[in-house]
Length: 120
Image (cartoon, rainbow, N blue to C red; front, side, top):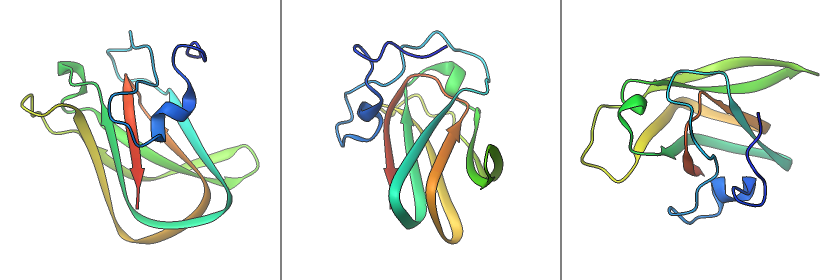
C-alpha cells in the first residue's frame, strides 16, 4: 500500500519542516513498510534521526536502516528502539552509527506516520 502522493508527498519526509506528514497512518503494529532515500552522488553520514507520530504504538518499536548490497538486495546495518517518552512532540528514532557510512541509497524500515528524517 502506498500513501496518497497528493495528500502525503514523499518529499515531506525530509523537507526540514517538522509539521509535514508523509504517511497517512493506520499502521499501529510492527511492519515491513519502508521509505527509501536516494542521492545522485554518495553521501557520508554518521547520524540519522527519524521523527514519527507521538503514539503509544511507537514506544519500544525497533526501527531499522538498510543499505543495498546488490541490485534488489537490501541488508539491515543498524537498528534502534524508540524510547517510551510521551512528553515529546514526536516519537524519535536516533541512530548514532559507530563510524561514518557512505551510501547513495538508504531505507528506513518499520514505519507509522513519519514527520521528518534528518541525516548528518
